[in-house]
Structures are given as C-alpha cells and as structure tokens.
Image (cartoon, rainbow, N blue to C red; front, side, top):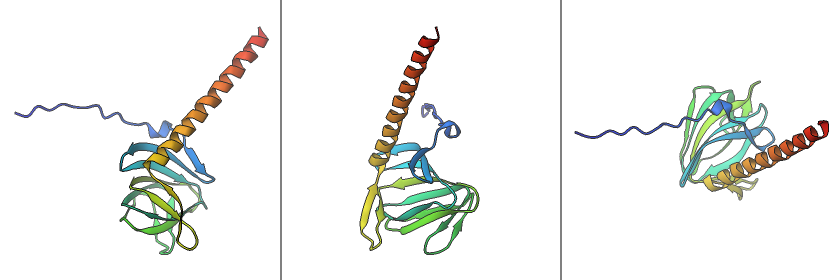
Length: 159
C-alpha cells in the first residue's frame, strides 16, 4: 500500500496583500517566483495599458475582474475569460471600462517589451520581478522603521 503524506497548502491571502506599483496605472501582487518564470496578479487601472511585448515562452492569463482589449485584434477579454499566449506571441493590451482590470498571469520565460521599430527596449523575468518585489519590501521596511522612530521621538517629547 502506498503511503500518503499531506503537505500544508500554505495559501496566500491575496486580498490582504498590497498592490506593488510598477508604473503609473499598473501594479502587481506576486504569487510565486520559480527558476523558469513567475505568477502574479496584475492590476491595470482604466485607461492604462501594457506596452507592446513578446514572450520567449508561454503565458497564461485569466481575467478576474474588469475588461481588457487586445491591441491589434480589438478582442475584449472580460471576467472569467482565459487567454493562452504561445511563445513568440507579440501583443499588448489596455484596460477598458470603468473598473480596474485584474488578471492572474503565469509567465514562463521572459517578457520582452518592444520599441516602435520592434527592437527590444526592456526585458523582465522571474529574477527581475523578484528583485522589484524585494526592493519594494526593503523600502516599505525602511519607511515603517523611519515612521516608528519618529513616533517614538514624538512620544518622548510628550512625556
């Protein structure tokens, strides 16, 4: 008989996680970083867009809220819709409507952002996304530490 060992699921309370800004109108909540890619919740404010890009491997995107429009095709992707993008797909998209667009994204490989003539102008991967997240965490800790120190000094003046 096979022995079954249960491992803790270790669920993330994504609703309690802050949105980490990456640029105006765009933010993310990291879910998992792996050697071959990452998973995140992406939030795009109405009227904001994800610039033209190409991915080196596949991307899976499941719309949780809001609507996005795929550039070039005009396809609208709403809540509950899933999009599979194979390696080499070139696209971009924007949040349309009155509410933020939230998408669960699983990226394998890298995403290469493209300039006007198709040249790669920026590239992100699991390592760069993790570094962005860790830098945000360090800044948050520094800010909270500074705030705590100022509050302690203020309290000392009151006594």
